[in-house]
Picture 1: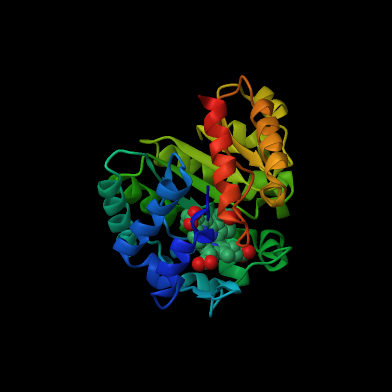
Picture 2: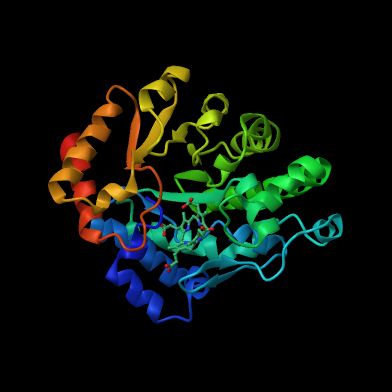
Length: 316
Ligand code: 1CP
C-alpha cells in the first residue's frame, strides 16, 4: 500500500531527524528502516521500497525537490526539443541508493515478506517533467500530445528506456515484483492512452519480465480493456472500478484494490463492513487486497491496521 508508512509516528520521527524527504530516500539504511516499519507495525504482507517515482527524471538530468507540506517541484521543466536534447537516457547506475536500500531491506526482512519495487509509468513521468509539479488537468503535458506528437514520443521513449534500465536493476537488487504507477492516466482519452501510453507500458512489461508485475492506471476506466491485453500480470483498480466487470475482460489477470481511502475516516464498524464488501466484490477473482489509491496523510494509522486485520481475518 503506497505511502502507508508516512502516517506512522515512527516514520515522522525518522523523517524529522534528516533534512527532508530526499535525504531519506537517498540514505539506504534509513530508507530500509522506513520501508520495514509498515510490515512490523501495520502487518502488511509486503514491503514497498521507500523512494519516489520522481527519481527517474532526476536520473535523466531533471532534478526534483520535495517541498515540505507542498509536494514535488521541478526547478526546471521541459518546454522544447532543445530541452529534450539536454536529457539523457538513464542507465540506472545513477540510482544506486535505491538498489542499496532494496538489498538492505531484503537482508533485514530475512524472507518474512517480499519487497515490491516500483516506477512511474512513462506518461505520468512525462507530466511531471513538463509541468514541474502536480496539476488537476496536466494541460501543458496534454498540449504536447496534440501540437508536437513526435517530440512527445521522443521524450516518452527516453523515459521508457530509463525506466526499463531502472526496473531491471531493482530486480537484480532483489525485488520480488514491481508495480508501475500511471497516476495521471485519467486526464487522457482512450484514443490518446492507446497512442501515448500502452505501447510504452507494453515495452516495460516485455523487457522486465523476470518477476511478476502490476500496472495501476488511476481513473483510467476507459483504458482497462487495453491494459487487460498487456503482459502485466496484475491490474490495480481504483474505487470507481467494478472488479467483476474488469474480470470479464480477461479472466487470467490478478486484480488489485480497491477500497476508497476516505473510508478509513469512517467509524470502525463502518470500515470493517466496507472492507468486507470490497473483499466479496472480488470473490472468485485472484485478488491483492488493497486501497484504491494511496493513504491520505492525515489518516490515523489505527484505521489502516484495522483495514489490514480485517483482510487477514477474512483470508484465514
Ligand atoms: O508507501 C511508500 O511510502 C512507498 C514509497 C512511495 C511510492 C510508491 C512514495 C513515497 N511515493 C510513491 C509513488 C508516487 N509518488 C506516486 C505514484 C502513486 C500515487 O499515485 O500515489 C506519485 C504520483 C508520486 C509523486 C508524489 N510524491 C506526490 C504526489 C504529488 C502530486 O503531484 O499530487 C507526493 C505528495 C510525493 C511525496 C511522497 N512520496 C512518498 C511519500 C511517503 C511522500 C510524502 C512525503 C512525506 O510526507 O514525508
